[in-house]
Image 1: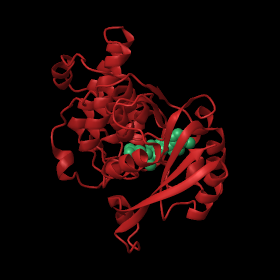
Image 2: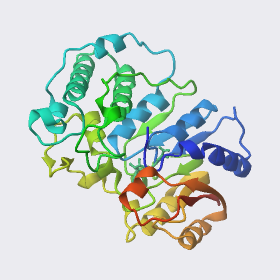
Image 3: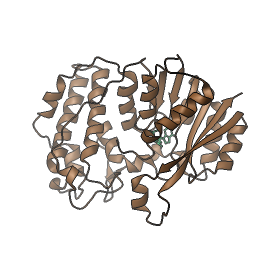
Image 4: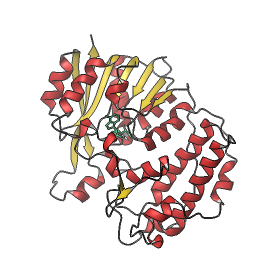
Length: 333
Ligand SMILES: C[S@@+](CC[C@H](N)C(=O)[O-])C[C@H]1O[C@@H](n2cnc3c(N)ncnc32)[C@H](O)[C@@H]1O
């Protein structure tokens, strides 16, 4: 998934640094927590290395993705795929609220793809509620739906706005594709505010990848949130935002971020803590250093990084094509 702040292309840097600081190797048995999990790529990587992974995100679509990636292990029954891809179209919530043909004035998906998404989403709920599929299969197919439908979205990159005309990739007929199933230990996934969760869990390595700026994920991915929840929310405005006042992150505001971060590091019961952040984030390098140094031995590593596409599109005044990515490290005492 093309996700703001995804660490997909920084995995080598993260893995090398974490190995250097901790001395842990592939196959070692330790607990790795990825508590701002997003797409779940970091947790998946550590599950595949043999760790027990704890995953968390405040967004429900991310919880769905990670319920599959972190808690499911092979073999899973793939036989439903064909049935789901061949269901008769349904004029459900997605069609009625995000497709132009319904008269809602929003153009996030073609009418056909919106109706196909509805048909699959409705069927999955029915199969799960009636006990015909268990949690494991429910999250397997639902995570696959969230991941697949995103490729057909008629947006520039995030769901803050839709495009006027249907772009090429969104015109294609939507096909549900199944996500890979990651072999490894069965982990544990949460859907909580990180500061509340941190008080309840413990482990060896804590990886933190908070938002870097004021752009809230709940607003940028609201359509995926609604597809994942399918809870018939009241939508507001031209772009059809759902109410997400309970998902606003303290890490997205200059006023609250340092306090939230300090509280998190203080409460974290992990020996090693790593924080991804860049040189343009809401917290300055000095603030991070100062906070982390209060709790043990601090160091940092850096790597140049190509900017996320949407940043350039939304803010044409940005001159530099790259930013400096930091991995801040703390050995907690
Ligand atoms: C930079 S992204 C993480 C990207 C992820 N590492 C990846 O590679 O896909 C930050 C994530 O933190 C989540 N988030 C923001 N504030 C949070 C909070 N207070 N508690 C839990 N998750 C939060 C967002 O929903 C978002 O998915």
